[in-house]
Length: 341
Image (tube, rainbow, N blue to C red; front, top):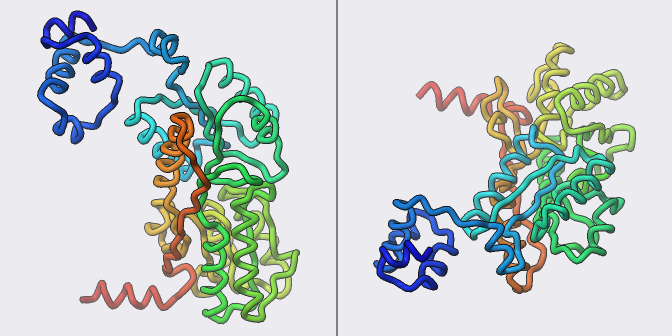
């Protein structure tokens, strides 16, 4: 830094202050001439800050830990990208670990994060039974929850109950009386809230979903397929199936196809999250769009706000129902009319 200061013609404290701040290319254009010169000299000389030395001075590692169930799920991967992009612009790094929702792995990764001296944790695998979150709350380590909520802990989530309410209203308005709900994890607030919202909307309209038609069996395509195979053997057969995430919904559609049924015509199908593939399926999937990337960005901003002494509170982002052909065959006719023009 002394070399940079001499070449840029500024005091070394100015170099420290300028290089401590991470800025985007757009923000750099708005810097003062002196700050831009410092950054230009630093780049030319190949200066790389030493995070360990910086941590010794500040008492912080400038590293945040993120615990997620899995990154093979594009929804969680997109959320983590939002976290990583936000915290990096604020001068922090993030380290992610996948726990598979397994208690042993959760506790092992928590210990690893503590040993790595992370400044804070963002937890995306909270369970409604508490689990290691209760243990984490007893430690002197700032944290918040994302994607799932638990108790009174600060969280950044989608309004999953409202999303479920949208689905229940949509299916009832289409006249479906025999509705099934599949997918999701019984210990996750996302699944519980989506089911609760759906049942609330249907109850208001005089419909009932018996317990045997609610199958919280998992979040993958095979999970949705297996649950649907069983439901199609029951009587009466469902006329609509709400899968609590899009991958499970794709499995539902595959099972319907194997049974000679057409989604949207014989059985309505609705998913949740609106992953990028949903609109491009042979029969486009009706789903609830969640602002998942913004959820990650918001979590990243809030955890740094907490580290810097600012008060934070839970944030619940708004979902939106996106109606496509898989639940409403009228959408196919609309598409055909648009294509013919």
